[in-house]
Amino acid sequence: MAADPDRYDVLVIGGGPAGASTSYWLASAGVRVACVERKVFPRDKTCGDGLTPRAVKQLDDMGLYHELERYHRYTGLRAVAHGVTLELAWPDHPTFPDHGFVVKRRHLDQVVFDHATAAGADTFQGTEAVAPIVTDGLVAGAVVKDKETGETREIRARYVVIADGANSRFGRALGTARNRSYPLGMAIRTYYESPLHAEPWIESCLDVRDRNGSSLPGYGWIFPVGDGTINVGIGLLSTFRDWREVNTSHLMAEWAATAPAYWEIDPEHPVCPPTGGRIPMAGSVNPKVGPTWAVVGDAGGSVNPFNGEGIDYAYETGRKVAELLAEALATGDGMALQQYPKWLESEYGLYFKVARLFAQVIGQPALMRELTRVGMRSRSLMDWVLRIMANLLQPDEIGPAEAAYAMAAAIVKRVPEPLP
Image (tube, rainbow, N blue to C red; front, side):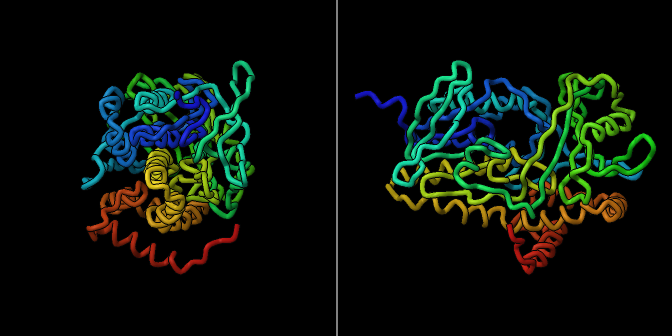
């Protein structure tokens, strides 16, 4: 008898980094999985497009390193502040590579989504999950709608993975909510043509000023894409006192007009209109698991407040949930999925708590300026700051970066968790 085309072991809601990762690893384990994505690839996404060594490792583990080699490889971070420039190479690490790539999301996400399809996942583009199906109190699939025809149908599954991104609508329908005491990130970006589009460094400006020389909140970035363009953007956190009053379009215009001259940006002529968004961070969305469902990636707030990076955590959380679901399906152990929150806490809990403390500090512009002024005087200091902020610490090594992080971690362990 043929399998029911609308009944699966697992239904994944969303085909971005977290959803595609989940789908790939499930399909590779022989699980019957469906993935619905409301957009049609290729599609744009507000992002800096930079892949850290953590993300590169995950893509390599999926067998996609050869795809990355088609795009721009970079060596590390160029930090710019207070008239000082430091070029900081990614550190040697026993687990992660010493380089990253810059890949536009319209390309990257399609590559991983197609890879999940090739692995055996049934994937549906232009298909939106509009409501959960609940049977006997348990989530058992979703009602999905074809965005082109408007037709709806049911896809039933033993488990559902929610990977529909920041401000997850499907997750909220199941009762997930963001802890508003946690930091929220805001970012806006566009692309400009530049003769330095193949620079070996991604650049971060830690001291952004407007055309009058006044300090602006947030940090600016310029990531060379290698295709004649550079990704130019600016981000800030909700820990900045007046963040709700910030006009991000004005912020973007001022940053583009004052970016370092060597990039030769024409601020009046971006390649495309700027796009922006808000991103929950530091694991701020809960609950992350139910009896038959789990939340991964941005939908669960799995974004690093130190640097706004979420792609690597999307791949990692998707992979872990796939591993747990494959175990649950193979053994019949319905409790296997309940290990997910424990894994999140052991893997990211303390690190994200330290990052939240950092977010509170940089939300105070005067303090941030002084810290960056001191930091930029020392290459060795900034080297270990980079290792901490990119989560590239070595667990078996006690170097300056690891010692500094351990000190910060010891402090935040004594800080009570904020109430939702």
